[in-house]
Image (cartoon, rainbow, N blue to C red; front, side):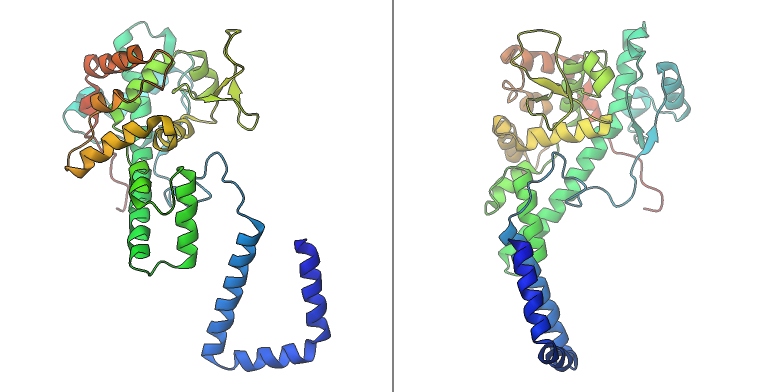
Length: 334
């Protein structure tokens, strides 16, 4: 249909070529004419895009919506064994003891957990390696969400004042759609685009992956047990036979899994209570408590209330709340 219309338009232009050329020369002769022409071209392109229908957003819209940092924020780390990764962290002075003293977190992105992490006999050392591997990723993903929230807040303010441009308006609608929000409901949009306490994210990753020892963690970078039923996303099937044909969603690297986990909490209808609790804390100027937010995650696991109790035990017994106030090292030049 679009091809036929394009052909008809071109044929009409060819038939009226002298008149079209004369008109374009007159328009191009003034600044106002040039501006009007550009505006008309843009409007026609926008209308054509809307008429064709917006394509559905991909499973991860970070790149497509321009939500990632403009420059690499973390340095990729690809150590293959646990000892090498421990040595790297120790050389950088990256220890949980230093973090408890307020030290900044190095900008290191572990691509995947060492396959021999389960071979570490010392459980405390294994847990420390797991936490140090994931913490920079969670902090970076939260920083990206804060950046998105800032851009969305500015767009919402501009829309309320009647000065939001067509391109930014379309971008805002796409972001709202990606988060499952009503584009006209500013409060709902902002409830969904917010950070998750690192202690909660780390506790869920530890609980779901057995501190990185599960098959899904080793083979699929899946630390949060997210399920998929469709064929469009890669995943690993559980070994149990009676599992409703779902698979555990696989990721190319740990960072992708962290982003998907945060987006899941921020978009899925099952976690509306978590978002409401978080918004109430923000409204009174306090940081959301991971222990409180954990109470809204009965739907995350079939274990329900027992799952919530396990998360709270992980958070308290491992002092994970001490990691909530930490920040990544400053980027060079910033």
